[in-house]
Length: 459
Image 1 (cartoon, rainbow, N blue to C red):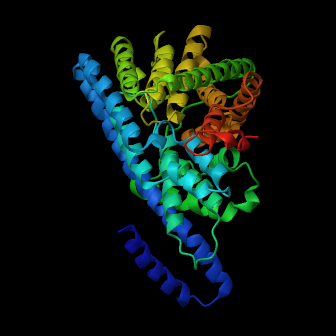
Image 2 (cartoon, rainbow, N blue to C red; image 1 turned 120 degrees about the horizontal axis):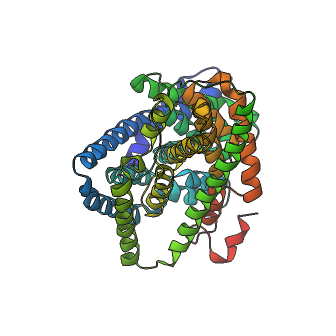
């Protein structure tokens, strides 16, 4: 079936190619065509995933609000099913998805690289990623859809790359994957600049000049496709932010240091548990672990409330736009540990949005501790950027994302300062980010490389 479809598509593409006359225009158009198609498909799937994610998140809130004790049934069951889907059908669909895409980019150009990439980015991964994360969310899981959207988008770009026939002008697979990741983030958050910066800072680590046209095109098309259905929106909104002067500067600096440390702590705990889990060799042990995490999560939510569930977007918006909104003493630690418990359960789900929401609750806790309500929104925004930077070691991506989410260009310098201080603290605490360390685990995995060659891929 797959071969018949590919043969039919190849014949159409051959006809399309033969009809073009101008050689330069032909080469540019033919090289760009796979990027255009991939971006449209990625944008459409991002819209579907976003709407489904939002609906399921609201459904869980309704269930948990009406019958709080149901969490003890729904959470363990959802956590187990989410893990089982990944374990049974696509083990590389677990977790965020960003490390898988970065590993795929590093595999590109290597011997057996395409086969290794296919294990990380394929149609099965797309399906399992969506179904597993939605199942986890139904149980209240503290996850985001942004990391999964990035892997899904990368898988779409890789799948279409594999359909490109031999007679087609050569297309760089690495560039396709980088563009896929950027398009995915841009469509997920409605942050085109964030997608481009993420591609340069986290995915490509190369000169923009080498990939600018196709990268920009992918981000624009995926973003516009998403906006066509979701409209032009801000992920968070436009909160009021005070000017950064006098004592505000001191508070921003201290908050950035403090929040970056907790971002480092968050990622360190995650990494230690993920690596410790490798001692669970048998399926029954892994299943029991997923159920145990579901019960632990249910207990946490039962005593702390719905602020510990889902992506945390509602928490962020409430804190930034409701002057009277404030966190309880337990809100920050409960969101912090709820995200850890959910992630290590073994299902699919991201930590981008949860990191921002944890940062927001930490920022509000700092405001309450220091009794500085006049700087509330500034401290919350600072903490969001710094916490995320502490996890990802991607300061530019962190502050650009928050800048585009809030449209507060007048506060760009305070955001940049927060990111700069946060990355300085993060680098002192650990030279490698959470994603970098997970990527090394993938590159050295027996699933991809023979044991005798394990250490050759990581320099």
